[in-house]
Image (cartoon, rainbow over all chains, first blue to last red; front, side, top):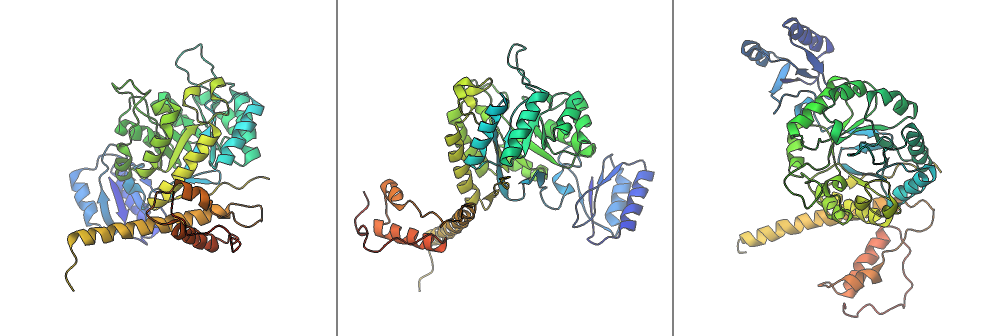
Length: 346
Length: 91
């Protein structure tokens, strides 16, 4: 249950209300919302107490989330939340583009890739240093050295970086290299030990949807992060496994408007991992922006035929520039805009 | 004056939506131009390329006129007088 209190309710009254609820054995959270106090009650509220709450003068509205989540529920914020990754905002009526190679493949390569990403007009640099590959014989990434190469390239081009963490034991290395956003991949979406470990790291988290996860399971995973203290969560739809075998996965755009109703979290769409075929990515990106995505995540490689992973789904830099231009047009006609480029360090 | 038909009302609503989209795109174009930081004049619209791809119904003269106004609003330098005639039909 989410309680919206009357605007201007004094802090002492909010505190007294929470104390009363906690004395009843109910755990509560106070929203970071600044416009008015919003209190989430985690546990099931007995009917008599719910009726009493509705009568209290400081309570203006009572909301029931559509699922068994609280802190990621739409009603826990007055407006949809905006996540800041470096100087780039996700959400809030602006569309941002995350781009970069699937894998970090060396320092010089990353400088070249980052330059291409910036030139094309994308906002955030991605690249995998720790790679969750389907077979143990595929390239597993450069690990900590890859983090350094990614961060150096991002700093040179003024692009905040996003990269996947697979093991909580690696978190100190991610923080030492000042990774701007931690990505939790599809395979780890329900790795609750990992979610709890990174929730308190003070970094934004990009949470990919699991290969076979329902929307509710995905939001429960996001709730783990929020309950652990992470209020900077971005959801990423990357396709789900279905009976269709013509594409790698099926991009589930149906859930975008539904997520707008259920959660305040911004949503990014990754059409590359859904399609697995580069030429399908531009039209899927257009569809995602038109359906309300706050951002697009794609892979780009200067020489896809030589990529150490996922080459067939990598765009060429010129194709990325076209995708950014089309996203700008579609964002504008849907009443939004493309995010401004981050400041250049030069 | 006869009452407006429902189809006219629908067309009027579509026009209003398209006008809002055009305005949004023009603002977005101006924002993109603001990202040019070399200090030079703003680039002009590539009108000849647009004309090659255009299939009407606006004439070449009208399209040139519209983009001339957009360039002027965005601070791009104006073309020299006496250039290519602007009355030829679209390809």
